Length: 177
Image 1 (cartoon, rainbow, N blue to C red):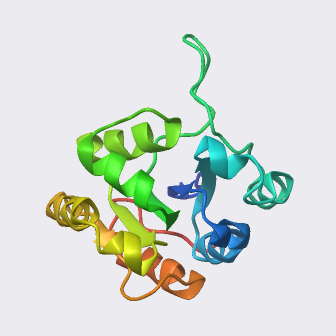
Image 2: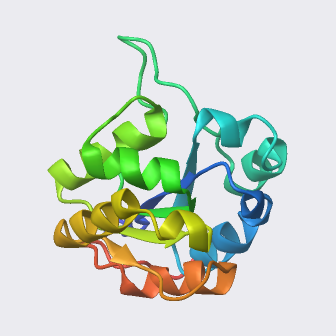
């Protein structure tokens, strides 16, 4: 008698959401990611989780709680390890802190750890022209690119953020749901 094949492991995507007005459209990234075969968990900056998007709607869409705070020691990890990470919308503050290694929130600590773990990361910045002109920002983007971070081109948009999914290379290829 043959044993049935276990279901294929779906790769796990962390979506990091920052506090930008565009955050209310995060479902426009989650849906296409799920359709492409990813399981999704959302990690938000504390400010983003405090009213920049509908946390309950994201919980319903992903089937998982949105994380914005570190877990207590001894508490099980609520998400499996990430196969890839997408940061959208990515703010000036988060990008600069990440490039500098300032892991003062769960969201930025997750991004810092992703580099050390060799997890591919893609970013859709949502930064004004004035902030993008700041030398610290330009240096942060340069540093993150040298770390292998994939950046969306052009102004922020959910379509560009979704296109980043195709650029992520993971050991576990996404499977059809």
